[in-house]
Amino acid sequence: MEIILAIAGLIVGGGVGFGLFRYVLTKKYRGVLAEASKEADVLKEKKMLEVKEKFLNKKAELEKEVQQRNQKILQVENKLKQREIGLNQRQEDLGRRKSELDAYQGRLNSQAQALNLREEELDRMQMREREKLEELSGLSAEEAKKRLIDSLKDEAKSDAQSYINEIMDDAKMTANKEAKRIVIQTIQRVATETAIENSVTVFHIDNDEVKGRIIGREGRNIRALEAATGVEIVVDDTPEAIVISAFDPVRREICRLALHQLIADGRIHPARIEEVVSKVKKQVEEEVIETGKRTAIDLGIHGLHPELIRIVGKMKYRSSYGQNLLQHARETANLCSVMAAELGLNPKKAKRAGLLHDIGKVPDEESELPHALYGAKLAEKYKEKPEICNAIGAHHDEMEMTTLLAPIVQVCDAISGARPGARREIVEAYIKRLNDLENIAMSYPGVTKTYAIQAGRELRVIVGADKIDDKQTESLSTEIAKRIQDEMTYPGQVKITVIRETRAVSYAK
Image (cartoon, rainbow, N blue to C red):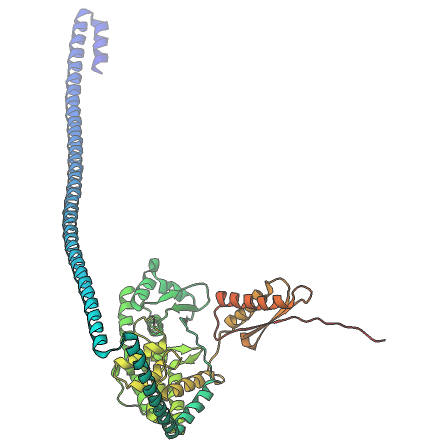
């Protein structure tokens, strides 16, 4: 506004107005320039501070990174130094061992040389002694040997005759015992046994929503349960069912009971899982011991070692072809007692051996021995009598029978397992085994029909008479038997019968 007034004054007033206008204008622009200069200085100072701050931050980051790298380099150097020290120590140990081995080898060589010299000296002494004996006796070594053999023959004949007489007398005295053995061996020929192991337990649930809670977030619940119980839990699309898999039946039972309590309680998380599993383990252990004690009391068996009582209790959680192992052991014990009483033997010992005959099937630790031999080892460990141990170890012919208790236990074990309704085989596995038998035989050329009969214990193969001759039928039977033996697993043995026949048919009209 002042500038406009100055211009108006210039137009009106002439020269005086122009001077006034220039003065006002100069003063105004000086103020603007001063203000701009101040603002520029402030902005410059602000920018310098920002740049300085960024520089300091960048410098600090670089120093930190350099420090971290230096620390890593120092750590690597320390590790290399430690490794170098370890290698030097190992090298020194190897050198020391090498020197010890060299010294030991030298001693062995010197001892071997001394032994060789001693042996040569003994040979020379033996030759001198033989020469002296021949000189004193007036007989050569061959003549003396012949006379000695003749005298020994006569003596052996007389001893053998007296021994035969003693055996005959003893046989007459023990005829009753031998007759009992023959009876028991006759019963054995009709007794058979097969076995199968169950390794899974199916846990039923009310609805499939529980599966997600059992698995937990990112699977933490199921992992905690598997780690605590030592089993494998399979959660799949099977409706209202969870599969618990483990070779140890006690572990499967602990997992099953723990799952039942967790689902009933509703609180499912790793800490709660460990608490419940620990509590269930104690409950199962107490129940195992109580079951063993009750079984021993019911059968009238006394003086069992506490560990054997616990093993007997563990049989409650084991089955064979659907037959409970504890029930099988009780039944075998009662059968052994009855048979021993009928044969005039000790029924209490027989009952004891019958109860303990399968303790090797429920081991606390893995063993490569068959269950009969492992059971005998356990019985011997816990101070059972030798005849009891032998009966346990020999009931599958894996140990030589030394007492009459052993065949009694073997027969009663087979009777308990072979009676109708005692055991069952999985139908799918049974049908698959029959189909596999027939398919193996059908794969050979010239075979027209195959029939698996006698519950898979016999395979009849019908061949075309125009395709295979009599000699080829023998080789075909052998080849099928070898292939079945190599490719399949089955109890007992399978008989392969190859049938070839020629039929001539005519009609009278």
